[in-house]
Amino acid sequence: MRPFQGWPIISGPIMKARFLARPNRFLVRCVSRELGELSAFLPNPGRLWELLLPGVTLYLESVAPSKAKGASTRKTAYTVLAVERQGRPIFLHTQATNQVARFLVERGLIAPLKGARVVRAEVPVGNSRFDFLLRRNDKDLYMEVKSCTLFGNGVAMFPDAVTMRGKRHLQELAEMGRRGIHTTILFLVHYPRVTWFMPDYHTDLAFGEALLKARGHVQILPVAVGWKNDLTLDESLKVLTVPWTYLKTEVNDRGSYLLVCRLEQAKDIAVGRLGRQRFPRGYYIYVGSAMRHLTARMARHGRRDKKPHWHIDYLTQEAAGRVCLPVRSSQRLECELAQALSLMLKSGPAGFGSSDCPCPTHLFLSRTNPLHTEGFHHMLQSFRMRSP
Image 1 (cartoon, rainbow, N blue to C red):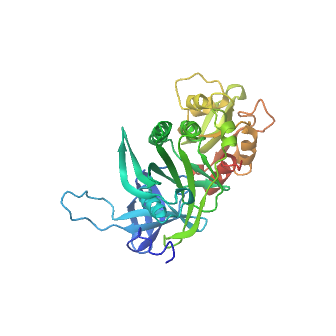
Image 2: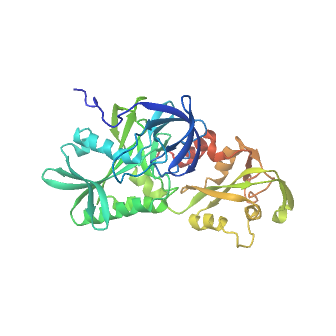
Image 3: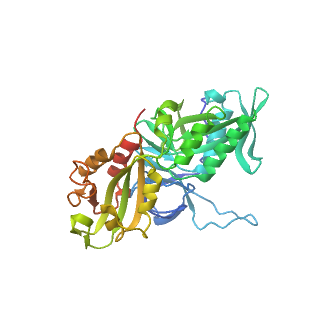
């Protein structure tokens, strides 16, 4: 028998649809050729910004209504299973990821866990509940599973949004490890063409710091898997490398950032010594840096009750929808980021944010939301996901 034959997770037919919008974390609007526009449940709380782009293909499964007494009433008849990127599906169903992990462990397909068997699932320990209790060589092994869908340039990263729960699990597993209890955290990366795994310290610095501290007490096990178009696993599976030495240098609260904000209508705004400037309606991307206390610098941009100091302060007083995207690095990448944006977008006022460097400007204009464009995410990943 081939090791992946009879994969049990998909029980019914799969329907494809085009993504339209995401009204909230667990709901998407999409359109299919057969049914027209419909809503579907998305069992994934991550940001998924670089995946859920307008028009991308979603893989949906029809969910039969339950007639059992006391069963919850769903408002949607479909569940999102995966999204297509670079011609192949990326599995999104975080709850079903545990079934994938169990399948791989029970088949002995993850080399570092070979010989382990699943004793039970959803195991309470203290104030937490871990995904699995395994047994190997007559010893207990507690395992937590995380689903990873963030990747680029040969690098996979987790998480794609701040996860207090994930950090707590990691810290508790590390504490158990210090007491001599065997623990592991399995990161299932749903894309096979990657080599490296890192915590996404750009998005969640605290998780990155916790992972570094947990090393030596918890088995950190990132495994990449691939999916076929019928949402069965292909036979590519590999353990990824964690570049610990690189991370010790880079996981720090310093670097550069992109501040995205929206101006609802064109305005003339007085910008310090630059004087009154005309700002057309649209989305503005500002490039800044702070080689110390980057988190505090970005938080300042989110406050309205502050005295204007930098050029960007005058714009953010008038703009809405501010989103800060950190690029943590031991190197100052501010000018490189500005150069990359200048090749994609229209430049803002001359000298804006660049009075202490040779760049023409550090402000750029996009008529559409850059977070909804593939090119912007590719550019951002080229800085965030650099091979060590």
